[in-house]
Image: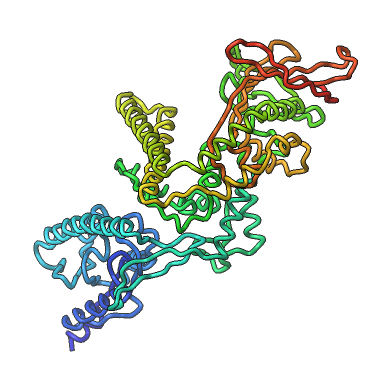
Amino acid sequence: MNETLTALLVRIAIYARYSCDQQRETSIEDQIRRCKEIAEYLGLQVSEWLVFSDSALSGQAHALEKREGLQKLERAWGSNAFDILMLDAFERLARDGMEQEKLIQRLKASRRVRLITSDGIDTSREGWELLLRMKGAISQAEISNLQHRVGRGMVGQLERGYMIATPPFGYDLKREYDAQDNRIGTHWVVNPDEADLVRQIFQRRKDGQSMPQIAIWLNELGIPCTRKARKADGGFWRQSRVRILLANPIYKGMFIWHGSTTFKTRAAERGEAIKERHYARPELRLVSDETWDLCNARKQTRSNHGGGKNALAGLLTCGCCGGTLVLTVNSSAQSVYCANCTTAKACARKEGRLTVTVATVGVKKLLSEALRFFLTPEFVRVFRQALHDKLTASPRHEYEACEKEFKRLHRSQARLGHMLANVDSDDPILVDRYEETRRLANEEEAKLALLANGKVEVDQQAVAAQLRIDPAAILGSLFDTQLPPEQLRAMLRRLFPSIVLEGKDGRYRSFFRVRFAAGAAVALVSETACQIDESLECRFMLRYVPDNRSCLGPRWEVKALDRERGDAIPVTEAVVDASP
């Protein structure tokens, strides 16, 4: 009778957990069943309300806040709701070494709760602490071995052409089985409806729309969020979710092992060096490399964020400090100027700063005439010849050119890495150059692998379309179009990767350094992907002629300056009714 009463008075709690990387969901049932068998052997009874569990969650410290079952157990422990805690194994409660030690110290400090596990731990026996620490050390070693085996298996699957992890928005999961119905691996296949939305998202971003604008559009369409919603209403698109989607390289047909931002952040916190591996998946490509790169430009300014009502917002750079020129408030006679230099001179009394202003109407005339200067009949002829050569070039020639570029980038990366290793502090500019060079080297390496396997083909339709058009005839009236400012701004960014205001030598004469992307111009007009990464650069003088100096009325003059001789070469003289 006394034993029966004791069994009723002793309250038993059970905790079970399985992690998605190594156990099945039925593992929780097995763990609970085993604990109940031990309780029955000891003549004890288990209350169902004291059975706690967590499914598909890691035992590491980073997943503690997600384990609701563990949190309920903690609250029951704190309110003295049980006397014995039963586990299938100690690592079910915690795998992290520090968390395990905290639990040991808690069991030592309060002997009221007795811990019993099915693999032989009982805190009522002598030497339980040593045995528990030994099992914890073994568990830690197993975690390391498990991570190695899982990582090795994932890389093996990627090498064999399969995919890993849950597919992102735009793709579905397709499993492959052998004759015995054993799973061999998984593939990602394109989901036509979602893929069309992905292409529209990239096109909107390419046309200059901001990420919030894209998120609003997706929410208005009622498109489900790409991640599992935390709330019953299904969640909604945010700017950060659009950014994550755009940054995924799988949309340009490339899967990067250890390339996620989350993995890189965790590795940096641990001080671990990581090596990315690139796996080409051309069958999963949804957008061109050019489109992907444009939507993930490293220089994040208003010009590629969709901000501002003026098409010139964020396009021009200060030749003194390198900052982005801003627009004046006065919309009737708007000008651009460098706010950084103006503030530095006014507040810090720094001399030699660029504090001049240039009317936006003059800048537009400068860019229009720069197009005419670059897109000469001779240039169009040479460019068409280069397109024709690309169409008829042998694969071997392209492979050798790609191999040469990869070796050059690899050497540059090695030099920059050596420089970083020999400086006392991380130079942000040097770090950015190293990261950019490494990214380009990885891309060339992946392209080299595709060329070696014969998987890279010239886009013949795009080349043919570019051979048919005359960009000079269409781009001459670029500013006369009725495009939204963000779309015109995106076009100007592609045409002119660099527009630098160098300064003034008087009230009416300004000097600019303009770089023109020839390949992007032809691609833009033909609405095809860029085939030749060509760019030209020239210095220009922009001069305003006021009304009292010309019988023709106020006008702007644009002249190209020859770099070697410094001569002024007239481009055109355009009459414009505006003031500087």
